[in-house]
Length: 153
Image 1 (cartoon, one colour):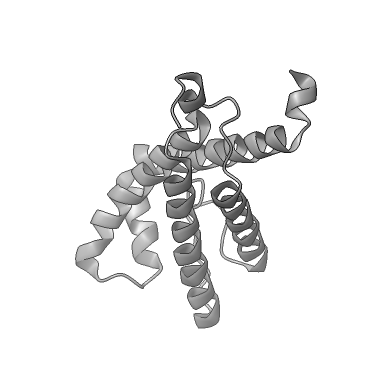
Image 2: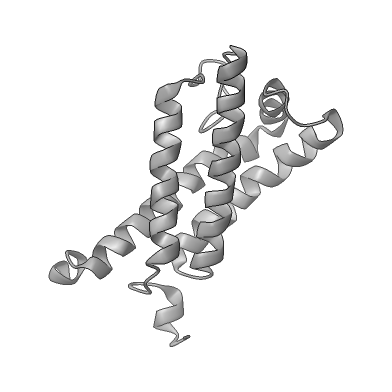
């Protein structure tokens, strides 16, 4: 089993599961504190007011579902595509606010007022996660996936 994990198939599995865990972790605090997350979404000053609460409710659940999908190996490509889209939109939102000179809590992993603020390092982190999502999308494997266990094609 260890030798299989060290192959390309195992590395692909490790990337897929790591990205899944990362997005589950990212979703947790936002799901438990939707009001605080709505304030963070509003601070970006991009969405019209009537869409802020909807986005604050839907986005964390989408992150959670996509993360679970990646870990279980079910609907991997659509989940990687959704996460890639979320990362592109978030990167654009961060870039716009950096250009405006606005320094706010990013809302990435915590709704706390002491959480990470916007910066170039955040953009680099998001670009790295986007590369991981692209890897999962293009090199999807079924190593240790539920679909493979049940013989789905």
